[in-house]
Length: 285
Ligand code: MBD
Ligand code: FE
Image 1 (tube, protein in one colour):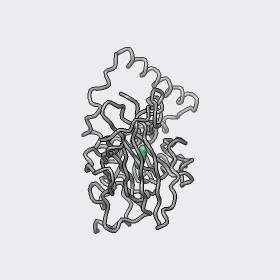
Image 2: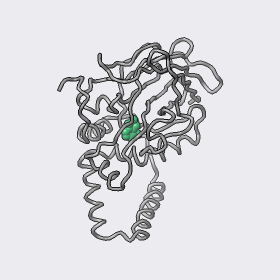
Image 3: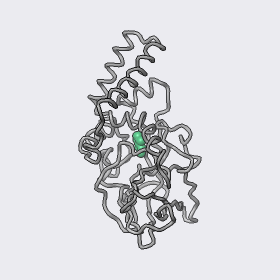
Image 4: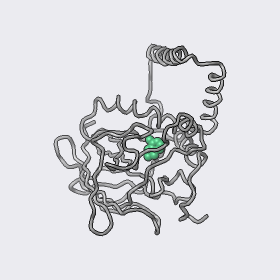
């Protein structure tokens, strides 16, 4: 298969499982969750209490209990815990974190962030294949603080799926670093990034996460989105996602991570492409 062949869908082994390896190598949060025995006990009681209540209310049978064990073991064997937890649980954690946040709304990080993207100047094109498919998208904006002061030298670390809904690093046919970049804002805190409009993302059907979603008869889709982490010296990092108003699955995100403030409405540039301005506002750390 050539590196430009986009006809194959990544399998669970190509995408969910590498996300497990990426998580294991991630040391951003290592050693930062110091928790007292009292808090562990409180949370464990609450968590097990909720599980026991489901067993009782829904009269879970022995065959169902054993099937649940098998499925949970497969989640581990397939290295899909990061994918599963980011799809089903991260939005709730993000909502708690967002309670104390001012400025641009956050959203979940998901399992496909990769550190170490290429540093790019403020006005740039994301790395892409020579024959990258998709509608050109010019994504411009400014990074400011909550008092409207522009933030020069801020980092807009952006990553998104291609026009087939696949992420580089998690689909073997895509070149490393494709549609990923760490863009540094100019003297006025501005950036303009040329890229393409991503497609919706489908949870791989052949892994335990995809099989559970199918077993529940739910659509396995996330709406098309741009992921960003925005960082500036002395400011609280923003992790969010931007969605396309009116796009497929925006009202039915399997990961429940959309917020109305994060919807883009790109306009035609008159040359077959789209333009969108979106400004990011950071609060002080
Ligand atoms: C994604 O692309 C994503 O952003 C999340 C949160 C979960 C699975 C795939
Ligand atoms: Fe994503």
